[in-house]
Length: 106
Image: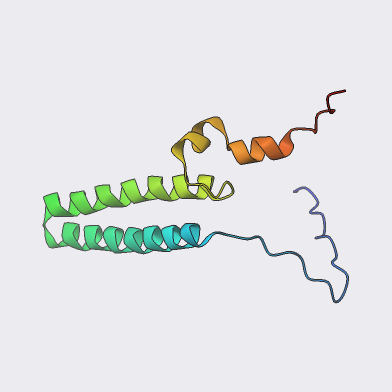
């Protein structure tokens, strides 16, 4: 039928896995976008049902823009710098971390 699923790696007792650090700005941005998205989508649906087509479509368009913004924030979250340039070219911080150390001048 399907592929076998590997069991999750066991963590020794008394040892907790590290919790990733998420900057406060990312948390606030996620919260605002998700809340606004829900409110905008719900308002759009209610307005469309109520017969207010233009306003309802505007609210749904705002929801679509908020979905794109949510994807952008999630893509930039590991970088924690919220820069469009990092999104396109890749984060400079991660690139520096991946570079192997160079030999000293000698």
